[in-house]
Length: 369
Image (cartoon, rainbow, N blue to C red; front, side, top):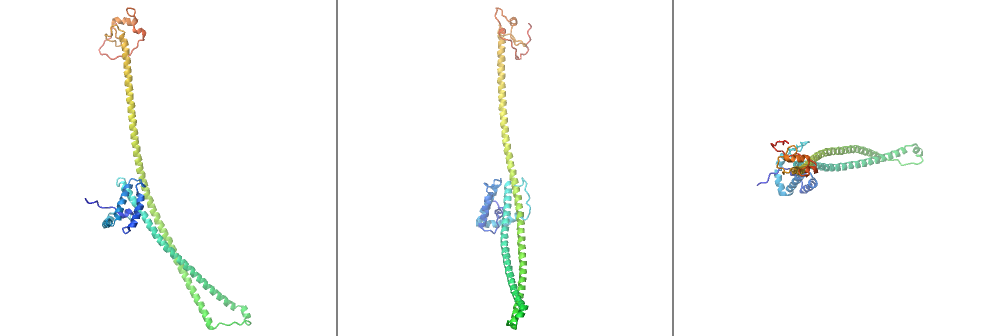
């Protein structure tokens, strides 16, 4: 039997690209395995997610199985949903099992973390380049400004010398101290040097202005890039919080459902125990009532025996329904007057007469005394 076709995006599950090396795939697998392991993730779909992660790693770590998977990977990508959508429709509880939902959430979180890491790496590279360019521009500006100051110092010194030559003091003492005058060539050379220094200073000032503009552009670019990275990170952090909140809500629902089922199970057990206890108490009550009735019946039977024993004819006469006494007409007189013929006392004298309900005797007539 042929194995079932693979439809999962193993690269997306592991959070890597198709061109990534095995070392990067192994690092990503270890990181996700620690996060999705059932011992650390007690959700309902953690085991299925961890098993799918293991299948993805087993497929991609072997070169032959990876090549076979790469052959069908374009069709898997075409059948997968578009990753450019900003919002993922929330599946209903009956549309997807908790395992696939937990796996989808873990995959989305892994993709967002991978995007943040890639963005951070790009930002670090760009920041390093911008910092280096800014450092070089600032150093060039300092060097140019120092050269401009040197040229200005030379020009100021020459101006001071010329001013001293043309001052009144020099003119007064000039007859006393004769100085050698500069030749025409010397004057031309000095004038040419002054012009060159002036031109050089102008060029350096223009260079300083240009480099300051470049420095400002680099600083703005660095600040803008940092703001873009921060905004993208905030957006993905928000998405991660939304997914984690959805996962937490689902886990809370599952936990509450389990707790509710456990409470119902305990309530059922308690109800059954109460019913059994009530049944036992009812059986004990019925047994006690039965014993009490039997005791009462025995007491009534004993009382009837006392009454019937008062008849000298051993109670073969039908019983009177009103007094529960069996007596022949001859003995009734003795029972009423408390004496027997022969002087013996009846049982009625020694014990008070007690009446009790008697069993029903059908179709007996009252005696006529």
